[in-house]
Image (cartoon, rainbow, N blue to C red; front, side, top):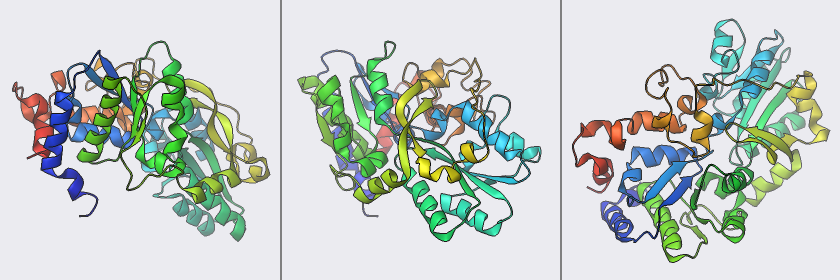
Length: 386
């Protein structure tokens, strides 16, 4: 399969693993991936375990479900409890705990919460139910925001008056700045998100090396993609020349998707947004323009702000800023499992805790199939290269 098989080619994987192994790391380094799909791929292919001992790979705030605050879920649950409202949501948001319950639990009590696979499905619900309000839970980053904008455009064009957004859309540069300025986390380099970069362009991340001296590379999602990006970042760090590399050139350009960017500017404006684990960040979210207030569920339904409360024992917030790894949370793989998640990082299919539980939960980071053998630490990666 083109653009898949050649990026899992065993010879290339072995060569890149050798390149990484031969690099002389001058000091302990921390590299962060800020994409939930990268987190899952890195764990699935066992790539965390092929890095030199002094290189630590941690996950950042790249899972849209995970960074969505509990206060937003409280607002969504309050809306779902109104008899005139249908709440439409992506499936992995339903099980994320709010302050008192999840959307799934609210649905079990009679709230009308429907799972959709795209915002256009929610628009179709509005067409089919003209007597009720349909509120789409618009979360995600720059990748999914253009689809929400397109749905608003279509609703405006067709005069579908009962379609609304409850927005918690976010943009990536502000939290990356916050992490680099934080006192409890040291990040030397980044694997930049391939999907987001396809929209905003790799040029949007120039500030990382120029202002913060952080090494970075835009990465794809197959083993060769990820290893090339890791190698690019590590070479920058070992040579002391942080820069910005694009190792996902078959998809990402410097300027990005100009049509998608224009759509975002036409329907959204920068707003302050709360990130789980990081806090309130100015201009880190996207809200509907004032002229579209009739599409904004918060305005249309006079929703009160909800502060939200998280489980104090859950350390998802620390995982999201790379301060700890999932096994350092006392709930991980005990009280907190995919079957009984205590926090958002275990719920989402892109969550770091879910990735570690599925692929890396045994002591020492070994893959569950390794059964404790001393050779097991790199087994999964070697399987890719065999």
